[in-house]
Length: 82
Picture 1 (cartoon, rainbow, N blue to C red):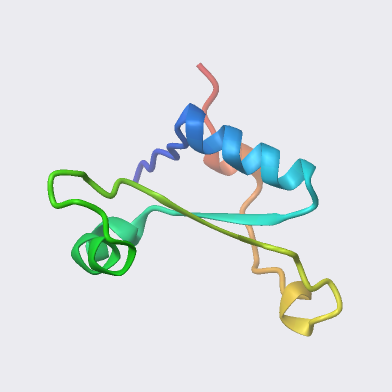
Picture 2: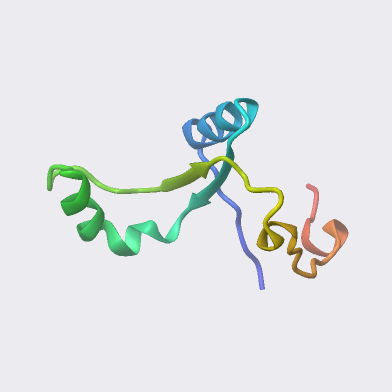
């Protein structure tokens, strides 16, 4: 199975700027499944498209949930350099 990780340049710029300011980030790709609800909530015109979202905030490093690490495959198992 092959997966592609996509992060646009503007999105990556926001993530990097936020992290440089001490904020944690989480790009949200699935937000497009809720585009109508997001448009209503944020008063986004119908002719505009919701393509991505980024959650951001100050990390709570003391919270036990912030210490959770899921098991991960090694980079060599996932990446094929070309």
